[in-house]
Length: 125
Image (cartoon, rainbow, N blue to C red):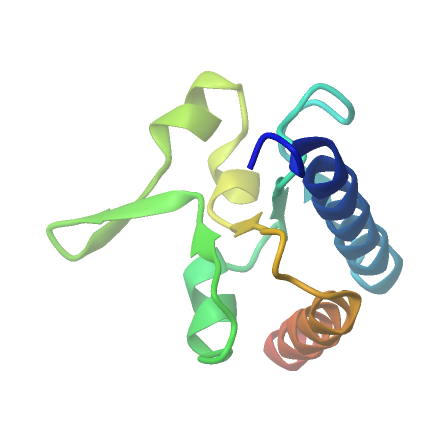
C-alpha cells in the first residue's frame, strides 16, 4: 500500500476532479460542499439545491453514493457536519457524497456523471 500510495492519490484525485467537472458542467445550480483544494483526494461532496439527495439516489440503484442527510425516526435531517459548515438546509438536503477508490475507472466516473445529470433533469421536469 505504501509503495502505491502516491500513484493511488493521483489517480483518485484525477477521478474526483473529473466527476466534479462533469457535474458542474451538466447541473446548474450545483454547490461544492467543502474547500475546493484542501480536502481528501477521494471524496466529493456536492449539493443540488431544491432536490433531496435521497430522491436523486433512489432512482440510481446501481450507483453507490450517500447523502449529506441522515434518517432518524423516518424523517430526513440535515447532516450535522454540513450544518456546522454553515450549509443551509435548502442546499444541504440536496447533498451527494462520493467516495472513490483506486479500483474506480474513468469510464465509471463518466457513466456516473451521466446517470446523475439525467436523474436530476428528470426530477426537475
